[in-house]
Amino acid sequence: MAIHSAKGLMHHRVSQLIRHAFVTGERLLVTSPKALSEILVSQAYSFTKPGSVKKRLSYITGNGLLVSDGENHKAQRKSLMPAFSYRHIKDLYPIFWSKAKELSKCLKEEVTSKNASDSGVIVVQDWASQATLDVVGLGGMDHDLNSLKDPTNSLSLFYRRMRPKSSRVETLFALSVAIFSTNALAILSKLPLTQRKQVQTASDHVRDVCRRIIDDKREKMSRKPTTNDVDIVSVALRSTAFTNENLVDQMMTFIAAGNGTTSDALQWAVYTLCKHQDIQTRLREEVRARLPSMSNTNTIPSADDLDHLPYLHAFCNEVLRCYPSVPSTVREAMSDTTVAGYHIPKGTIFTIAPAVTNFDVDLWGPDAATFNPERWMQEGCANTGGVRNHYGFLTFLHGPRSCIGSTFARSELACLVAAIVGTFGLELEEPDKEVQETQGGISAGPADGVRARFTIIEGW
Image 1 (cartoon, rainbow, N blue to C red):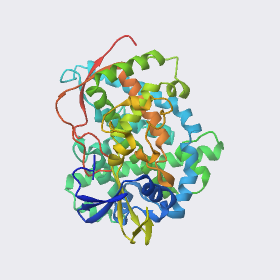
Image 2: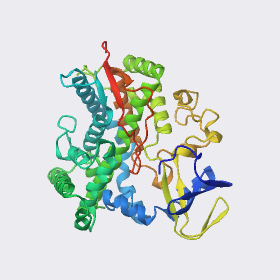
Image 3: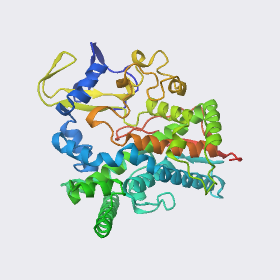
Image 4: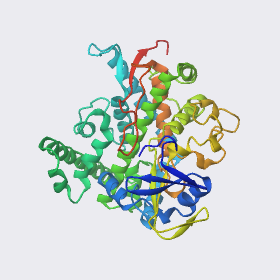
């Protein structure tokens, strides 16, 4: 359930928790830093995703990091952490930048192409999905999936073949049912014949690609052992903590989480730049003044170069605050316990909603509902936005089950945004049209994929 504010929920306040109605019964919306700290940090493994949620996610990820629990989760996260440390992420900036340049080039060609329709109008979702899939492939698996150059390749098509463009995440879900479910044939039999064939064909391709990447890495490491490769596959293989099938699960987790959520964030970034032309102009000026142009083939900005663009990072942080890709998640109490001093029976379901907490006026101040990058520009606020308690920013959650790829996602988003705003002027095709969120998927992107008019701005 995508939640933008507590308004509209059927609830009454119980101090630091809000009881609200849900389709399957009542849930407790967690609203206070104290309660959040207990559920997400101090008692994190006493509150897990409900079985039904884990089952659904496992169709996509198998028993990957996203759905594992307890000691299994601790071991998986410990083994994967080196791949997501800042020490490693800063070495991936050249990859982020190269794909950002490639995206810029592709968009230029799209705008100037004879086939470009609607006077330069582009559906951002298509390109965002392809770019982030490529970044995930190279940065996470040392494998270029070439989605930008060839959007018809198998790993791109499996996002496309099942449903309309507004339902990419649901496409992934439907495909992954066939890949990971032990009852795949039974589930497939309920789909129309054409969809069944598409799902089966796509699932075969995905499995083959995963196996090839693992086999190639294993062979390479056996011939020339090295500790220099820190992509997710190399780190996992060196740890010896994963079976081949579980490693496939981790790869699918990374593809699903790394592609869908960052793609959504990039779409919202373009949408916001269109809605706020003053912000767009200021950001373009900073990018052009501090970074090499997209046509510069000799200079690759370093992590330090990109990290020292304060307005770029303020803008990206505000996008992540105002448009969390996962608006809400749930946890279930595994035993009788207490939260914020209240007795909680076993089986109680909690809603943790970044789309509510990220707008809490008690934590963010009276302008909490306003898109304002300046909040991240104040002295001492570059990493906090001035929030009164760090639990007020829940986009990546907190604690041992927080998003392991948050640094990867932030860095990738900054590079992609810089490339787009530095190269193009952006306007919505229909400026007065209210953009709705997709519903029912893992993440929440713009339902229309953001239809924006891109105009090439020379001089960079």
